[in-house]
Each structure stands twice: as structure tokens, then as C-alpha cells.
Length: 315
Ligand code: SF4
Ligand code: SF4
Ligand code: FES
Image (cartoon, rainbow, N blue to C red; front, side, top):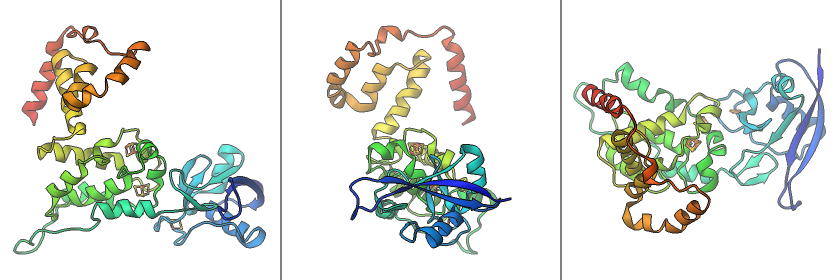
């Protein structure tokens, strides 16, 4: 039996309105109806000015990503009745972290610019005699990254992207891994060097949102970890991100815990660490300054060092 469901949609036309506003619609919804079908019904029967993007209706083109009941989702892949049972209504907003062009339509230009920045195509080395032999393991390494439909949902929930619009972003970093992880790629090192720059892979704060909300199970954070691992293996460590990891590993090995003061110096270098003095004074006033004296070597440090030795031996 059909159920009357309330849809609350964030509307905004920058040519007509100063601020966004909410508009409510009610629809009779049958089990199985998607949010995209509901939007199409609203736009054809009630309000033709309602603007949103869509194409395939099959969760493969990535164009209908929007915020549904607080989370980024593909509208064509989201059941209205499931949302209704969860929240009692369906609240729809544009993707966050993007500029709204109109209603649910956002400007994807920065998204595509970031994609462009990572050179989103294979630069193959010379094909070996007899052709490329791609093993299952080779394929599995980049399998998840290849599932990306470029919907931009991950960038909309990315903490780093929120405070740094220049951050490469999870979607472009996943794409970068798709090529760095490909056995045929020739320019792996060049790519890794570029991705190690400011706004690159090391700026990710590992909040896990991209992995949690990607509608295609791409797991961007895993790809970012793999890029970092590869860069470290390649000895690309002349950047704060890689130095921070080295300092962390070193601190745990040395004292069995994080010696934050020493880590700051190792990560930033002396000159930049001096620039942090005003922040350090503020932290001191608020009792947040880590004091080296509070980081003595833990009991049983030998246990920790034994783990290190074991890992190194296994590697
Ligand atoms: S990684 Fe997932 S969320 Fe991000 S653009 Fe690709 S499909 Fe969308
Ligand atoms: S894990 Fe990193 S890339 Fe992913 S959303 Fe968080 S900060 Fe962004
Ligand atoms: S319309 Fe293509 S992914 Fe939804």
C-alpha cells in the first residue's frame, strides 16, 4: 500500500534568492521507489523548477549524488521507504563542500580540475615481448579503485577538503592509486613525488569518512594508505607527512609512546617548529603543551622493541 511521505528539499537560485530555503512536498510512495524517481515525480507533477542532475538511473554514471537525510548518497540507488523508516521523512540537500549552482545542482568544476591534476590516464612502459601478463593479484590491487563512478560524494564529506579547498581530495587520490598500482604504469615515481607535495596524499587526516560514505565501496582511504606506503618504499620522505610518520615510528620505538614535542621538531624541522612558538605558548596557557618530562620510557619497552625487530625481520 502506498504511503504518504514528506520530502523536504533545500532550494536555492542565486539569481533570485539571497539565502537557501527549505521547501516541503508530499508524495504517495510505493515500496521500491527511489529518491531519484521521487524527485522526477515532483519535478514533472508539482514543480518543474526543481533542479537536479541525473543520467543513468543505475548507479553507474555518478551524476545524481546528493545529501539525503544527512549523508551523501546516489539518489537513484536510495530507497525512499528505507529513508522514511529510518527518519520519518526524506530531507534532501546538495552535496556539501561544493558551490551550489541551483537547488541540488553543484559546481563540479573543482572536482574535475583535481582529477585533471593527477593525470588521469595510464602512461604505460614498453610492452614486454608476448604482451602484458596481468595476474589476479595485480588486478586485485587496483580493483576497488576502478569501481569509482566519479560521483564526488567522498569529497563532500572530507574533513581536509572542508578546511583546504586545494587538497587533492579522496576521489583524485583514488584515481592516482589506480595508475600507481598498475603494473604497466611507467611514471609511478614521478606521480608519487607530485602526490607528496603540499595538498597531496599526506594531508589526509584519516577521518575515514570517504570510505564510510562511498556508495560504490571504493574505500579511498585504503588507496591513500597504499600511495603513502609506496612513496615510503621509494624513499620519498622529504616532506612533513612522511617525516611525521617516521617521527611517530621512531618515538614509539624509543619511549613506547608518542613524544609529541620531539615529533613536532622532527616533522617540521627547526625553522618551522620555531614558527610554532606562539601556538606552543597558547597551548601552555591552556595546559595542553606536551612536556618531554611527561614522556619517560614506558615499562617493558623491550616488548615494544621486540615487535619492531619482528616486523623488520618479516619485511
Ligand atoms: S571514490 Fe566513491 S564516493 Fe568518491 S567519487 Fe568515487 S565512487 Fe564517488
Ligand atoms: S580519510 Fe582523508 S581523504 Fe578520506 S575523507 Fe578523511 S581526510 Fe578526506
Ligand atoms: S543517475 Fe547515474 S548514478 Fe544515479
